[in-house]
Amino acid sequence: MNPKFFSLPEEKQSAILNAGFHVFSQNTYKKSPMSEIADAANISKSLLFHYFHNKKELYLFLFDTCCRITVEEMTKSGAYEQTDLFGSIDYGMQAKLRLMRQYPDIGVFAVRAFYEKDPEVSADIQKSMGQYLNIHAAKKLQSINPDDFIPGIDLSMMYREMYWASEGCLWEYIQRGYMNVDAMEKDFRKLLEFWKKVYLRKNREEQS
Image (cartoon, rainbow, N blue to C red; front, side, top):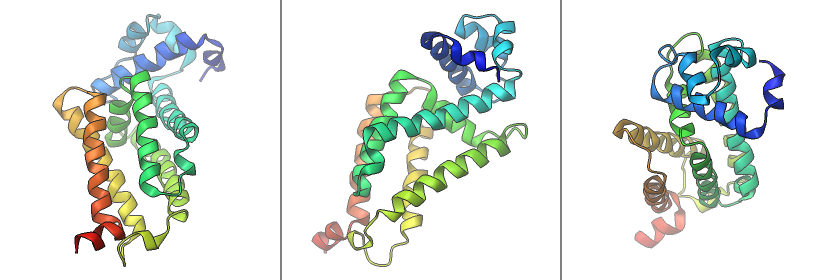
């Protein structure tokens, strides 16, 4: 990647990022041409290749940027400082929804990238995603008090199950063909309340 990309005005950088997120979110990696991204960003194709040497470099940069700005937004929101798991998830959800309002296609792009099968990029994506998930899952699990949850529960599996369910919820919206951030927030809050009833010891004891 040409470091001159970072010398561009923030508005121009955002235009290129949003163009990349949009085009790659609409189709597979292979069927997403650089010319469409250039058109969406309102720049020439040659200039896009000036900043990114090839499509793979741009794609992986977009995914790394997606992960990086998500972590930055969640850190800024205080999500990682919460000792309560569900409080942390709630703060994290708010941070991600803010990003989706700023970058409308970032959520769809992230999910499509996660399921991308093209061998040119799939291994790199899975490696990057695996490191991201494992690092933050490990940090969060260290702060969890096992006594807050039903006896004998596998906390690591519980955390992963909630992550997979969250991704599945997003994928369902993708399949519907539209992304309504407000509706997503409403549905996710229902899911969050369901998890509390299922996993928290005090809620299970109240029900028995």
